[in-house]
Amino acid sequence: MQQDPISTADLYDQHGEALQSISAQFQDFGGRLSFHGPARTVKCHEDNGLIKEILSFPGNGAVLVVDGGGSLRYALMGDMIAASAEANGWAGVIIYGAVRDRAALAELELGIKALGSNPRKTVKRSHGAVDEVLSIGDVKVRPGAMVYADIDGILVEH
Image (tube, rainbow, N blue to C red):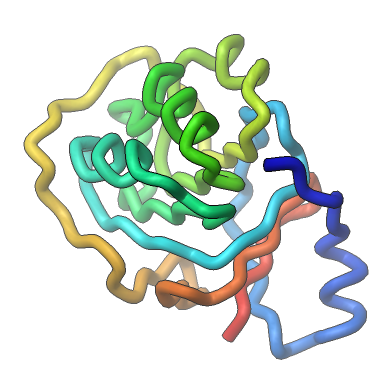
């Protein structure tokens, strides 16, 4: 599902404080550098079972926002889970944590932002919470809120 590129700087200029800006410095890992859609949320710590499960269902252009607690000890998503997300029509995945398989992720038509990478994979116990309000820094991400991401950063609708 191809999207027209958006500019978060232009969106912020147009809408100002109606949009929250996540100040954490995310890196781009996917082949799509500009993406947007309604948020689905997951909170998990060093366990990607829920991420794998959710991304195996149709995304319908949504963005999965994952609060991994900022941990870089384990990768919460790799090439196989990301390929599933691409195949299932997700616009992107934003992980407040780490990913792995950077070269393969860059080949996917999927927006992927994360704090960093680590080759170490997680356990899959599916511990965590789905579709609850997340806090990433001082930004609240509620399920269904529009999320906009590009190379300048990430904006979230209040």
